[in-house]
Length: 431
Image (cartoon, rainbow, N blue to C red):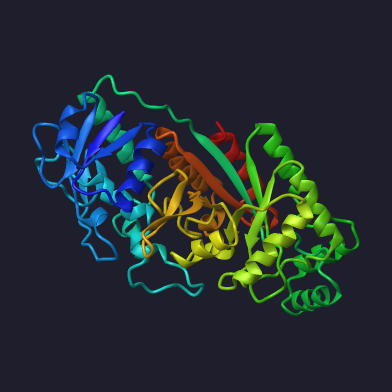
């Protein structure tokens, strides 16, 4: 058991210590604010304050974990043995930066509370993040820092025990449009036909007619092959279905269509099925609850997991709404068009609400790869190389590698064969 001495125990302090030591490193920790308790402790111990007590393992603290509200801290990037870090701690500290404050800054999405210009969908843009600006978005720095800290602690305390973690890979399949041409109703089908005809998209026009005549399978209908692929590699997967009414940004087929409902039920027999919350429900908690309930009624089991349309996350309001709607886990933390680690980690973590200074009861599962980040690349090997780099970095810290692929890309016509690419990703990353 590791004892951590500090001058003040706050909710932020407890949150980040539990995450780094218990959840990442598997080390039991206790806290002390009295010097006599620190001195009489015979096991491993560290001091996290402004000044060391004696010659113990000491990490100099920043103010971040001991204050409330939001302050615009200057972020100056340093290096810890070739790993980027910030919140310098000075020479007396055994670690050259405040690892706990820096980790809290990234995990809490502290910077997303600061003033910033949102994109057209109301999202925090990747180029506004310190990780993007300082060039470490492609590193799970929180996990790397934690493992490096473990090495330093074991040098000082060779008998200290910790639980070994195991690497995991999960594939998420986004189904916001289950079919391209089939089951879309007479009016929408006729409108699509006329649009293709008017814009001279003849190949698409032919495909549309052949699907209607049942000569050709709908291009988005790749569910059987995906399930067979997941079975082949014996790997966990999750399908997120949109179950919403038609709107400007929500264009799936009708939720009342029996074939659509049967599709969802059949996939739920082989994989976890949960909700891809609609664009319209982003600010509408009543609609979000309704979509969740209606999907649960189709699969005859509770819906606890969520993903949000276009990866729209507005910290902290989005997570408060998800908690109110009784979701337990969310898989939206990441950037659509930038691969990497939005929260600096490749492990699930609980959301810390800075405005309320409380840990919310929802677990965030950050993804590292979204297929739309690579749509402008034309070479399969180039895309695969970028994904492999992220995979290896997650593997080194025994993390959880999560990828997001969309059935639209997997079934569409592009320069890259996305089905073939997807199989290569699974082959590489599932073990």
